[in-house]
Length: 484
Image (cartoon, rainbow, N blue to C red; front, side, top):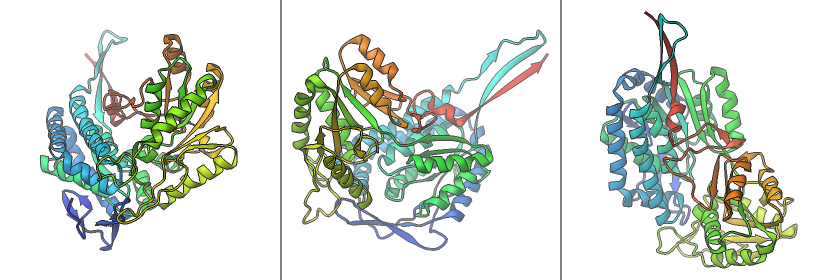
C-alpha cells in the first residue's frame, strides 16, 4: 500500500466525501508509528445522512431478486481473492498482525461474502397446514430494513464481511461505522463493493472518532431497524438500552474469556501447539482465543513446560517481516493492561514460565510489543483469570476432576468460546454439553468459519452470525392467511 496524506473515508449514497468539518484523523502502523493515511473524521450528521440514504435505497434493493444480489456478493468475494496480497498488506500495516495471518483473514472475509451469496437464494418460506378448510397459510421472509453495523479493529475484514454480507444478501441496505484504528480495511472493502456494482445508497461507510455520538445515532435513529455490534460488553449493553427505545433488532458479539482445558488423556503435543496457536494469534487480541489454560494436575508440569517451550520460540516483530508470528499491541492502553495483568498475577503467586516483560524496540520497531508470556501456578484471584487481557499472556492453572474444571470454566459472566482436549468419547460429549458457551472447540483450536454459527451465551452477546442462522438475523417472518 502506498502511503497517502489523505483518504476520503466517508461514502454516502455512492459518493466519497470529506467530513462536514473538513477534519481528518491519522491512521498509523502500530508496529512502526508510520503515518498511513488521514481519514475523514465524520460524526453524527454524516451518520444520519448515511442512514437516510440507506433508507431511500431500501425499497428498490429489497425488491431486487435474490439471484442478482447473490451475483454481486460473489463478484465481491472473487475480487477480494484476486487482490489478496494487497488487501493483506493493508491489514498488516494498519493492524500489526503478521502477514500470514492477514492473508488468512482476507480469505475468510471473502468466504463470508461467498457464503451469504449462496444463502441469499435460500431464504425459504413455508406452507403451514391450516386449521380451517377455507384458509391457506403461508410464511414469507422479508428483509428487516436499514442495518447499522459497528465493527472492531482486531479482525476488520472478517468482522465487516460477516455483518455486511448477510445484510446485503437478505435485501437490507447498510451503514457501517468501522473502528477508528482500522478504517483503511473497510475502505478497501467498500471500494470493491462499488466496483462490482452495488447501487448508490445500498452500502454506506462513515468513519470518525466520535464513537459515542455515531453509535448513539445508529442505536436511536428510527430509520435503522437492525443494529449489529462487535465490541466490549460495556458498550454493547449501552447500545442495547438505546436500541430499546425504537425496539430495533439487535445482534451483539461482546467480550469473552475463553477457557482451554487439557485432560490427562489428551494428545499433549497437539494440545500444546493448539493452545499456543489459539492464545497468541493476533498477539492475543482475539475475542475467542484461549484466555486461561486449565490442565489436569497429573500432567500439569509436563504440559506447562511444553507450552512454555513453544512460546519461547515465537518470533515477535513487524508483521511485514518474514517469519514474524506475533505483532504489536494495537495501542498504549492495551499494552498497559497486559503489563498490569502480569504484575498482578506475579504478585499473587504466578510463576513466569516464558516471556513476562516488554520487548525492547529500536530502529523501525517503535510500537507496543510484549513478549508472549506463560504464567504457571495461576488461580482465580488473579485478574488474568477473570478479566479479558486481550494480549499475549496465557495463565495455567491445575485441576483435578472433570466436574471441577467445568465449574471453573463456567465461573464467568462470559460465554463466547471454550476449548478442550481429550480422547474419551464420553468425556467429549459431557464436556461439550456442560460448557456454557456458544462455541466449543473439542480438539479444535479454530472452531469458526463462514459455515459455523458464531455467538455467545450470557454477557457475551445476542444472536448468531455466520452459518445458516446468520442470514435469519436480518429477516422478518411474515405470516399470511388467505381465505378461499
